[in-house]
Length: 238
Image (cartoon, rainbow, N blue to C red; front, side, top):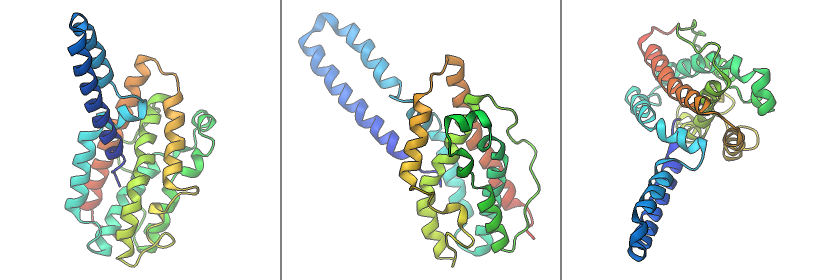
């Protein structure tokens, strides 16, 4: 579910290594400019090339913790365990319905309302004979636009990892039309949907404050799903 950060991180490591090699060679030929080159190298390697790459980078730690937590709960061992996973998915997606249907955000991303998976997760719960859970206190409320985009970045990115999860769900007798709808491939494909979202995200002009808000939104989203996952596996399911 949460594997969207790995390709970007690998690309950044490759860029960093190439930059280090270039800087080393250049310094050997122009010793009088070593300080300047070091400053340029620091600037290019310390700051990702795009906003989406930066968000991948700064969420690497909570992303890794969440991946480990999901694995620990073994959602694909039994249908009952998977149902708890879907409870967490539904809770998270239902908290983002207002963001997916926000008029200003939809002006930036026209297909945004159709991207929401709350109804799909709700239908999955019905397939799994599991009641729709009550809301959990602490949902995101009235975020700034930049903060909201940070939340959506995490939600949309999780669709990439869902390509692997749906294969595991099939082993439980589930599919994109029964029990695992929220993991289904989006219209137009996972990769194109993600590229379209990040093109828009990366193309927006943000102030320094808005950049910080987007970062915080993405971090909060990972932390929130972690809370909801723990709640889902701690609760008694109907």
